[in-house]
View 1 (cartoon, rainbow, N blue to C red):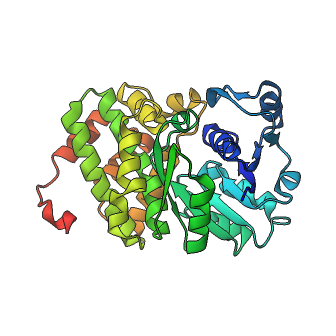
View 2 (cartoon, helix red, strand yellow; view 1 turned 30 degrees about the horizontal axis):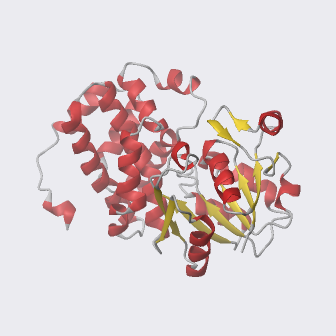
Length: 335
C-alpha cells in the first residue's frame, strides 16, 4: 500500500531515497534546511550540488517548512548528518505523531552524548517506532538503478518488515536483521576505517596494506561493537563488511577522499573547507575513540586516525606505529 513519506535531508542520500520511494509509488516529500537551496531544487528539479545528473520528478514536493511537511505522514526517513539530527528533530517534538515511525539512514555517532542516530531520535521524540536502513549503498548508484543490497533493522520486527517492503525494488534488495546495535554501529564506524584507507591510498602504500587495513579494521569494529551489546556476526554482513569494502574502495567515498587528501599532505581544515558533502567519519572518529576508552577496548586503528585528524600526527608515522606494535596471535580476535 502506498505511503506518505517525508525524507528529512536534501543531500545526495535524502534526494536519492525520495526519488526511489516516488518510483515505488509512494507520496513523497523532501525537506531541506536551506530555504534558498530548496527553492533552487524546486526550480531546476536537480540536486546539482549533491546528486548531479538525476532529475527530481515534478510531483515530489520539496519544502523547508517542517510542520506542513509532517502533516499526514506514515513514515519519516531521517537522512540528516548525525551531528545535526538533534537540532532538526527538536523542531518536530510538538507536532510529530506519537504513533509515527522513523527510519534512520544517518551513519554516525553523536559526539557529546555518544548516541547512535536511532537513540537520538528516541531521546528527542520519545517512544516512537524506529528502524535503521544501512548497507553498501552509494546514492549515485541507487539513483541510477544499479543493483544494491541493504539491511533494515529494528527492535520492532513488524516495522523491520514494513521498511523492507517499503524500500525493496528490482534493483534494491532489502534484508532484515534484528541486531539494531550492530547494524547501526557497523555502518557508522566503517567511515573511520575508510579515512584510514584513503590515507593509505594517498601515501601509495599498495594493495597489501589496504587488505590488511580492511581485515584488521573489521575486527576492531566488531570488538568495540560487541562491547556495546551488538552480535559479532552482524559485522561480517551487509552493514559491516559489505559497507566497509564499498566505502574503502569506491571513488564516491567522502571519507576515503578525506583520508586520501590528508595522505597527500593536506591538513584536515583545508580538506573540509573544500568539500560540499559531509564526511561523517571525521566526527565519528572522535566518538568511536571516546567509546573505546569508555569501554576499555583496544582500538589501535581508530586511535591513530584520531591522532592524524585531531593531533596533527604525520600519517606515515601513524602507519609505522601500527606496523611495529607488539606481535600477537590472530586467533584470539577470531574466536
